[in-house]
Each structure stands twice: as C-alpha cells, then as structure tokens.
Image (cartoon, rainbow, N blue to C red; front, side, top):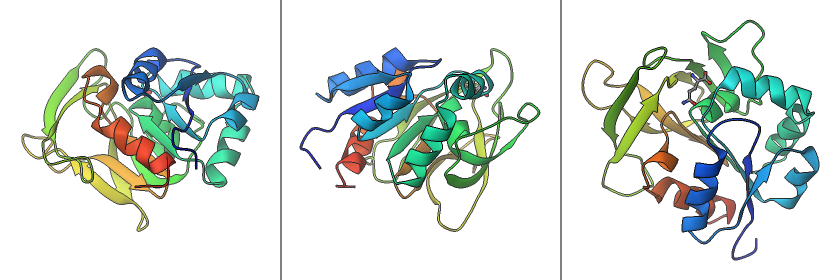
Length: 202
Ligand code: GLN
C-alpha cells in the first residue's frame, strides 16, 4: 500500500464536503465518488451522513449499488458515518419498505433511534483504538446498533443517561461505522484511524 492512499467519499447525497475537508486536514487526498469507475481509483471509501433512503435510491439509479457491494466483498476498507453506517448494515429496522443497503457489517441498526425529525443528541463517547479522550459525539437523527454478529467488534457505546449502553461504533475487518459525525466536530482521530486501516496499519 502506498504511503498516502487516495480515499473516496461517496458524493451522491449528504455531508461529502465535510469528510473531504477532514481528509484534507490529515494531508490525504480525498476524491468525491459519484460514478462506479471512480471506485477503481481509490483505496478506501467514506460514506457520509445524510439520508440513507435517498442515498440508497441514488446509488441504485447511478448504478453504484452493485459495484459498491462488489468492492466491499473484495475487501475495500469503508467507513460509514450515520446514514453511512446504515448503508453498511446487513439489516435495518425502521427503514422504508424494501430499503436497500450495501451491507457488509453483520449488524442490525435501528434508523432514527436517537430521535426523529430535528432532534439531536450529544454525548461523550470513548472509541477503542482512537485514543483515551472521549469524542464529543453529535447524533443527528442517528441510528444505533441494535445487535451485532460475532465477527463485529463493538468500539464504542453511550455511557450515561437513558441511552446508556447503546452501541454507536463498530468495526468488522476493514469496515468501520459510527452513528455520529466526527467530520462535523473537527476531531480528526476517527479519520486518522480509518486512514491507518486503509494503509493496512490498524
Ligand atoms: N436518519 C438518517 C437516515 O436514515 C440518518 C441521519 C444522518 O445521517 N445524520 O439515513
């Protein structure tokens, strides 16, 4: 793997620009991906927050869904935040009828679990492998992980309040997912972890 990998950010819908800025802050060239051929030019992919139902429909319309599944099956490292976490889930609760996902992580996520509409929720969450200090985690109509299969490592949970114990960060092989949005709070540690994963160093 090259010293500085090129990382794509799915650019169909959602906060693509914020992820590109977060990568840029780490000196990693990020490139928006809106066409299937672009997947061959990148060594890793970030799927941003946004709206998973819309993102999935656009992925089908732009003929990206199958290529995305193929790259995940072939081992491309992918990091999904919020709606991106839903896109990586094998199973979705409270989705729309026939909601499609890329899948790859053996988990069931519940959509809009932290509150519907404009509700958001903030908490300090420690993430295994991303330093001792907790993240200022911002959840915007966020999913949580309801259950995981045995190959999935839970990296973080909400630790206090009525949502205590809820799983909000997981990893399965080269696939990483968080319910919250580190790209919105200027904390580079999860992007750094993902870059190390892409380099095969984490
Ligand atoms: N509720 C959104 C969904 O279902 C996710 C929200 C977000 O990404 N901030 O996709």
